[in-house]
Image 1 (cartoon, rainbow, N blue to C red):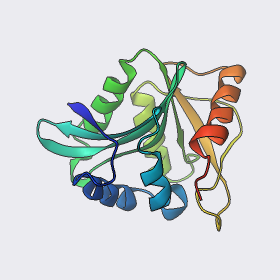
Image 2 (cartoon, one colour):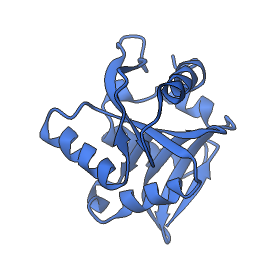
Image 3 (tube, rainbow, N blue to C red):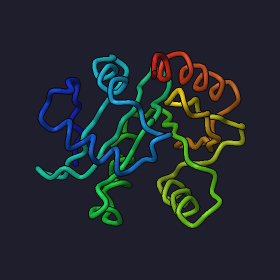
Image 4 (cartoon, one colour):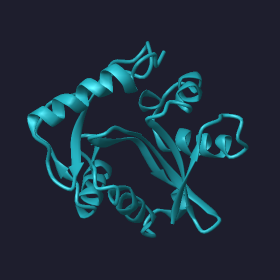
Length: 175
């Protein structure tokens, strides 16, 4: 398994990747197309295609800082789910040795509970900090999410640093 970084929205693989992105996330959790294209060249942003051999299996869209990696979006092709690709991709990402931070919906229904279980099996731990992700669209509001991190929970100072980065860098100029 490997990651291949895209930095140009004119790459022929970009539209295939964007189609998976649009199928995998509700509109309120998606960047607008112009915002997505604009951040591809940002030095901290990685729009990574996940491959198993020559087969495209998913996306890992993340931001890497000196202290942590923030997974903004992560998805596996629907027909490839349950085959271990997601776990292997997270393991590969974790090999960097940095804390990996991501957000999930509060575990209140079957899908969100299963998603939490998946991340827990991948050694992520929920953090107790109330968290609202800023809106991706002018006509939407921020939404409450649960912060998870690996290989261990993060302290308040690390959460505050992550949240500041999210608001000042990741969400800068999203619409």
